[in-house]
Length: 369
Image (tube, rainbow, N blue to C red; front, side):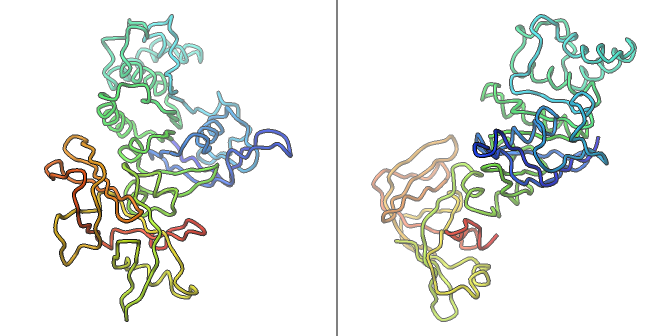
């Protein structure tokens, strides 16, 4: 396995005047043996990045290094990078065994080594009992494991996975995520995982790179991305249900700094005072609060920060999402299903100020991350 390093990478489609910058000045690295997820909405540049790493797209500017070697001009087949595609790309007329070993046979690998590599992959992925089946006889999870087996028998330097479990039934997806994470840990494979599904990235990856409009927005661990989003886009994209956003105005009462957001008034996060030092006046900012950090009470108390009216109650198993109208602002709260809330109830809100996020509306950047 090897480290993958992207240095000021650009991908530009089209001619001057009609050019589309799909990837702009992207610099990031995936360490040897690391599981790096690249996430973002459709059109953010993640697939173009993946295809450049694999050699399926040319690099417009910048470099891609695998290990100690720049591979910009290296043919895809010579990069020793294996891919697992969204649709698995299995040959329907071949058996599982033949799908897995075909690339080895093309390379001229000896029959004895092919047998050894096949048996090892089949054992690791628990597909030894389906080697003689055709793809049409397999479930989605089995097809995924076959596609991964076909990739790992090549002993690739880097494994790239493009939405590999998007076609698996939702009921099985959580189980498959856990199995895949465990497998890649065992293989110690340098893996770049491309997905639009932030839940997959948060639950599986060592680090996550968030992209938007061709640019890297933030890179870090799942905890760093979720707890300390660098800007409004990351805060809104990562987390389900999405973060609550509302305009707010910072105000001072002697040494106390607090934020007023329509019907709510909360103490400012500790880092905000330093961030505002030297800024002219007390301009309007954007307050962000995750629904899990909004607690509800049916009576006012010393820690409540505002009040509102329950507009919607959505049950999601052992939790429920409660939407509260507070002035002109709708605020969502995630609470236990044991909480008895009805549409029309008057409730009081409590927010831990240390869990609040504050953003500059002009730049979108976090003032407390």
